[in-house]
Image (cartoon, rainbow, N blue to C red; front, side):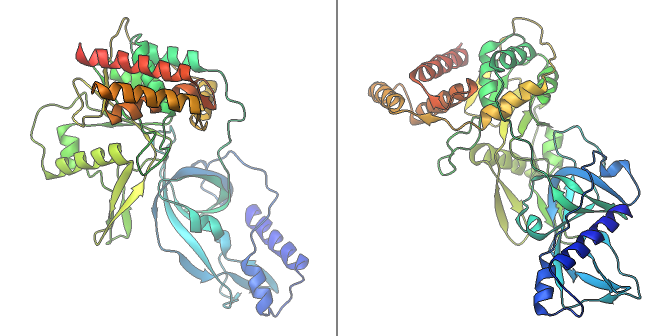
Length: 433
């Protein structure tokens, strides 16, 4: 009961400092509504699934479902002292409820973070105050709270630490990716820029860079290697999986639950669509619908949620790589046939490498007037001979941005534009040979 006692002590200190007294008046009730515990318990690294007792512990997971807020009496009097029902304390039969103070708590369903090596079913979780009002589906939630009788009451959320200084990891990361691809540096470079990509502007989907890697001799080596570099979810696509699973998150009103979809993934994750086991066969209606859902995700970074009476679009921002034996069934616009010069080798990337990716992906790159003028002149000249499309031109600009980011630069230079042209030329030569 140590943590519950600490919360009670925090409440009594708040009451003393605010000079509140019984019986409570209207102003006192309003003051109590704003109370949030300040406790001096140390941050613990004991996770909720490691204990079965009432305890102060940590929880990390992804918000998979949200229920309607619950209203409850927030405070009660017991032996002339005020206690709160927040965070799991239950009044005794002899307690007097202060029914003039009604609070809200926000029940959420939390699952293990897709793509992370954690385990266990996650208990019912309650959020309080503004954290419950603002939390969104598919958000990673990490924090400290009370585990009591199969429920977790969140007291303090913690933010993911920022990368203060981006390490110089470009050459090592490129080398490692290349090893997992059998020595193909060109394909490795394209993968690197995919890992740095994110939606820069939604209206025209600037910044997205989904790619298709073709003809990997050992896809699992690539998948396991890249999983140590960035949070990775691998989704095998077969005739059976496409025909029997539902990729659309769907509300079940019988149990008031959102049925989980394999596409419920936190932002800044990598989704690998593994088509290597996809054989010929007839897709049923569900399979066709799932392919349409994937195509919409690839093109618009959106997933449609089915709430039975209406559809709602949820925005995502994930990196997408399809691996396949031939061209992807999903026909991603940017594809490259991997050319191995050696046997693919498994690579375990370090925290420093992961910090390089994480840090570089957050760099905001400015396009100088010089590079904009250079790019525009190039486009005009190439359009005269009809040798470039608008899509290819925007792809060159996207690659220019991520080449600069990979070098930890905040401004793109003409040299990055030239590198992008060379890279795209190499990719196109493989598409025609």
